Image 1 (cartoon, one colour):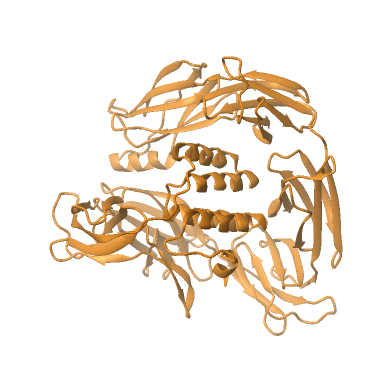
Image 2 (spheres, one colour):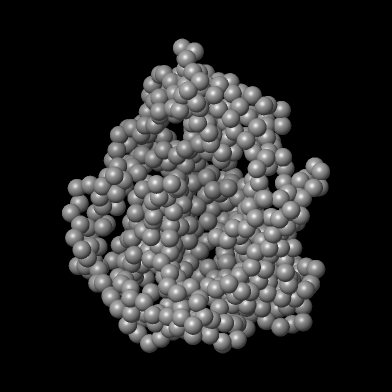
Amino acid sequence: SEAARLWEGVPIGYPPRTADLLRVARNVLARGELAEALELLERFLMLDPGRGEVYLLRAEVNRQLGRHAEAEADEARARELGTSDPEELRIFEGEVRGQVLDAWGAPVPGAEVLELERTQTVASCFGPIESVVPSHRADAQGAFRFATASTRETVTISARAPGHGPGPATVAVIGGPPVALRLAPEARLEVLVRDRLSGAPIAGAEVQVDETRVTTDALGRAQVGSLGEGLHPVTISAPGYSLWQRGEVPTSPTAVQLLAVELDRGRRLEGTLRSPRGEPLASAAVTVAGRMATTDAAGRYALVDLPPGRHVLTAQTPALGYTAEVDLDLARTLDAVLEPKVLLRVRLTRAGSPTSAVIEVQRFGRTESRLYQEAEGGSLSARLLPGRVELSLGGGSAVGRRTVDLVPGQTLDLAWELPGDNARARLLQANGQPAAQAYVVICRQREQVGYAVTDARGEAHLVVEPGIYDVYARDLAHRAVSFRRGVMLPADLELTLAPGGRFAGRLLDPAGAPLAKFRVTVVGVEHSARREAVTDAEGRFEVEELYTGRYRFELDRGQLEVEALRRGASGLSLDPVEAAALAGETREVVLRLR
C-alpha cells in the first residue's frame, strides 16, 4: 500500500524511464512529504547513481530540510554529471565469477560472497521487516560464480568467512573476467560484562558487534571473531539492565581487544492511562527512551530496563495524547489522562504572499517534529500533543521563534507574517563581475542563523535580527570564497570572492613514516569553517577552498585508537599544529603523531 501511494498516478514501464521516476518524486515532494521524497530519490540513486537530474532534485529537498551542505554537494555533483534525460535505463545481465583468497593468497573454501547492491527487503509473519543481502557460497577451492542483473555494467561484491576479517568491496564487470576477493586478517573482540553496583558478572547478556550476535557465559565473557581492523558499533543488552551502546570500538588483528562494560540496573515505570471521561484506554502506545509498550484492556502499561535519568514520556492513541518529562531515578509510577490532540495550522507569509519555510516544533528542549511549507502552498498543518511548545523558524527563510500553548481539542490558527528583507549582500568575482548562484551564510557565535543564494546580479537578500554576525560567502562553480568577521547587521554588504587558501600536508607516525587512509579535519580557529581530507599512501593530503584565517588540525579519535592497538601502544595523539590560510596561496604543513 505504501508503494501504491508513492507511485499513484504515474505509469511505470520496465525498464523505467528517468523522467517517470523523477515525476514520481516531484509528485511526492509537491505533497510536502519531504522525507518520503528524499527516501525515494536515495533509492533511485542506489539503482543508478549517474543521473544529474536526481542529484538536482535531491538538492532541492535537502535545501528545504535545512541541510545546506548536503544540498551544495548534490548541486556540485549534478553539474559534474549534467542533466540530460536518457530515455530508459539499460539492464545488464550475465555471470560474475572469481575466487576468494585469504590475506596471504591461499584459497578460502566455503566463503560467502555478498552482492552488496542488491539488498532485498523481507517481511516475516513472525518478526519485523528486515533487509537481506543476496549471497553465494564458494566451492572447496574458494571459486564462485553466479548470475546477476543490474542497471550498470558492474556490480559491487565482497566476501566473508569464519576466522577471517571481511574483505573490501570489489567492483566486478558483469560477464567480465574473474575477480579475486581477498579477505583481511581476523581481528577479535573480547567482552566482559558486569553489574555496575555489585561488580558481579552478568551471564546471558547479548553482545552485538556489527551484524554478529553472541551471548556471555557464566563469567560474563563473550568473544566475537571474524572482525576486520577498524571501528565497530557494539550493543549490549541483558534482562533487568538498561541498554549499553557505543558507536566506535577499535579492533586490530595484532591483539585481542578487551572491552569491559558495566551495566546499570534497568528502571521500571508503570501506570494507567485514562480518557478525559476517566475510562481506561486500551491499546495506547507509551514510549520512553526508545522503549515502547502498549496498554492492556485496563489501560495499564509497564516499561522495563529503562536507563537512569530524566527522559520524555509520550503516550497516545490516534485521537488522544499526553507527554511529560519523568525522572526515572525518582519515579516508578506515572498515571495520566490523555487529552484530545490539537490541530495546529500555520500560514507563513512575507509581504502577504506565502513563503517556503521549515518550522521545528520543540518541547522540553528537544525537537519533536518538523513542518514544511512550500512557497506556492497554503497553510501547513499537523496534529500535535497538548501542552506548551516552541516553534522555531529555520531553513534560512528568516529568524523567528514563538511559544504557543496547545489547548486540548482545539484548533490553533497561527498567521505568521515574516518581516521583509532587511539586509543585502552583493557578491563580486575577482574580475568585478557579479557572482551568481553563490551562497551567503550568516552565523552568530558559530551557529548558523540564515542563508541566501545570490541572483543573476550577485545579490542575496536576508532577514536578520540586529546584532553582530560572521558572514561567509562561497561560489562552488568558481571555487572562490570570502569571509568577514564581526559585521553589524542589518546592513548592505559587498564582498569580493577570491580563490580560497589551500593546505598541502603530510601525516607521519612517531618514527617519521607516512600514515595512509587517515581522515584529517581542518577546523577554523577564528570561524566555524571545517574541511576534511584523507591521506594517500604517502601520507599526503590536500584541503582547498579555505577562508582566510587560522586553522587547527584534528584526527579521528577512533582511527588513533585502532592505530595504537595495532602498534601495541598505550595511546597516540597528534602534536598540536596551527597554520594560517591565505587567499590563493598554498601552505605546506607536516603533522606528526606522538
